[in-house]
Image (tube, helix red, strand yellow):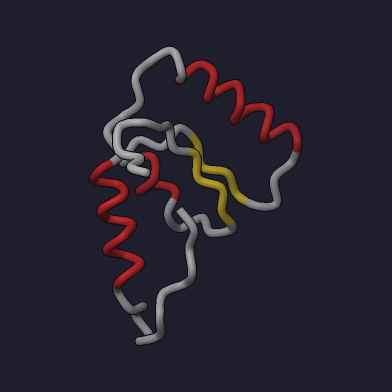
Length: 84
């Protein structure tokens, strides 16, 4: 299934170092773990508001993510496992 142009992106992760890039690429939200019920409620409200408009084109975001997954880390080890 192709995702480009069909979804709004919310990142849920334990890593804060990618937040700025996520928002630059059009993320609706960036949630750091552990996640509270109150925080999820805010995400849902933000998504509902965003659903009134067409989603951004995510093809560039997905291409960058795929490239980053394929590259070794700065210490030469394999990149962290990530799920789309």
